[in-house]
Image (tube, rainbow, N blue to C red):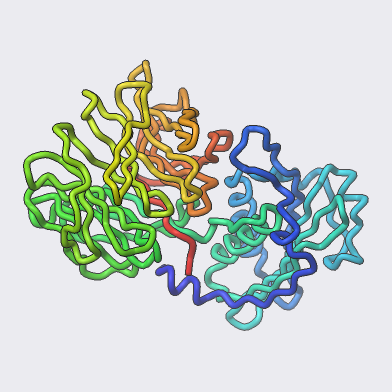
Length: 434
């Protein structure tokens, strides 16, 4: 489903008893190793009697909410067998002492009512320790998409406890093999709702999102050369952006939406260039004998992380876009590649080959240069991409033999392998819906 259409389906009527973001997050820093998952009771959704026999839909809704919150790594969901939900929905009807006794620090309740062709979903979120209601909200959406309602509720719950937006309604672009060809697909962050975006071209590779979420850049061999194209997330005919001789790969739109960083080899060597949104060259950013490739923008648009072999093997470098000043930023290992800047600007995730010739995901602290490992002893793991809130990563893995996608916390403490059929590569996490 196109992003714009999905956003249009949601009509929100909101009443906040307490603004969790204003009072400060209840769940703290999600990046640090000191975080302990927040004990949360997720009550079984209540189905209004007027809704008829819709138990299966309510169960599917509950499964989506639970899976999303577990994937985030921020919450420890209490086993439903450990509690009995017999109290009411409003604050005066909630027996907070009973919830404290089972170890819950947070409580989420929902009520689903089918009204014609719409679901009316009432959401109640509580902080148990203070006996306060954090959120009382009503969501209305078409009944045919109960999964999307589950993602929306998970977003609200995440925001209530962390003060930050959830990413459960965002989408991931990925390359998938189809009958011997490779095409760009879009999917929800749980691997569901998969739609094919590109047609033709035989090989369509390296997708990346425009900041507004309306378009995907990708490299395609549809004219027998690796050329750069742009396509609307709603589909349609791709627009050529760069068809210069040789490589036109790894196109990334700047955070302000006005420029494209891309690898071109029109002069015989792979270098990073800056294009305008029409594909015209604005500036050559690198000029070295080694291969320079895989640009990734900092969130302020002032710097680009990229890969260069100028040291004799692939390493990560940082380039100041205006001045051209460049410095090497990885010094361990002899094969570091696929940098991805965090939207928070503090980390760069990348792929590195370790001493066992296995590829794994690492993060580099931009300020200190500290490198931390995200994966280990789980097959080959490559091509990381950050969620738009900077709290999760998606990357490819071979831990189950075929190439699948993994959604992981930044420290790797919680990793979820997405269900999939076929080989998936080059994931790119899209922006927040607008």
